[in-house]
Length: 295
Length: 156
Image (cartoon, each protein chain N blue to C red):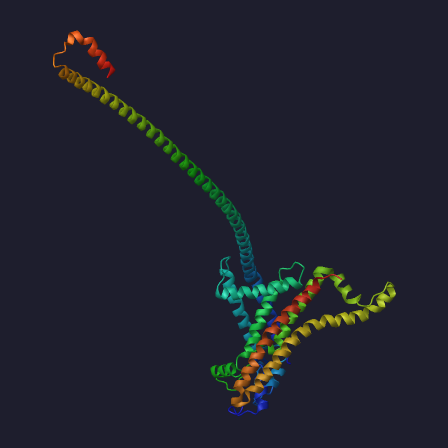
């Protein structure tokens, strides 16, 4: 593949790992082809440097698009099945969907003991959505980019297919979960209780002065462990899938040898696809369960 | 690692999908599944109950079978007895009848014998008389010797 497109392997890798970014370029910006931007404009980035220079207010159209598309597929399929759900004998797709629901429900019930209407559907959404996003990794790495390049008519179009190999996507989800953690911590324990949890543990004393002295240290420790939750959640998923994608890319550069190797790695990757989605879901449940518990 | 507004977009999409799932997917699926679970549990309980009833009926059946077997045996033995009795009675009847017939026959024979004897006697008397008449070669005067003749007749 790499040789047929006249790219070095390094360029091939970089091209595959670059998102299709849509953002605003300022006046006077010199684009990749040497063209100077005369009027501030929203456009697609033509080089990794342009993508970075677009700053925060830019969108990874490819990964975000796939992510939303897969989310819609999940929502639509489950909604269709839920609408038809009956107490009769389930068949085919209904059976499979109910298997997923039952699997998630069992895990939630095992870990999460407080009463909460959100946690179970949240877990189901996370699990199914992440599985779908991870599964995009099993599509041969060049197919969808080639398709996109053919449709758009731009042979150099950046197109990253697997949403979970984009840290924006994984962090986007973990930030949502982080907000829920804080929301439920405050809701269940009150603001004082939440702050107390952050500042009065793990070091505590009966002496008020010593207690106050310990506060900064406690806050540092607890704060780090609180912040570490969404970061580890997002980085774990991103790291696993990004590494998997890299290996797929390396295999794709081997010419005909890629066929058996791709198969072997894809089979192994199925495990990662499911396992990482499961881990993401389980940790979400655990974190939210911790947010509900009093110390 | 290039962070941009995709982060916000994904967070919003995440929230929307979760809320959709919470409102339109999860409750319906779970409700249907729980209802089915109850139905299955009820069905299983009913099946168990049926099984129990079946065992009971089975026991009752064998009990009744035993009882009817006993009754049948009783009826058969009663029949046997009755049969024997009937045969005995018939034999008795036959015996009585036989005796009756025998007695009647005997009586008839006796009567016939007596009759025959009477007849023979009178014939013998007649023969004797005629013999006597021939021996004497003369008419016996019946009127004169009537008392003698009657006496001889009686003796014969």
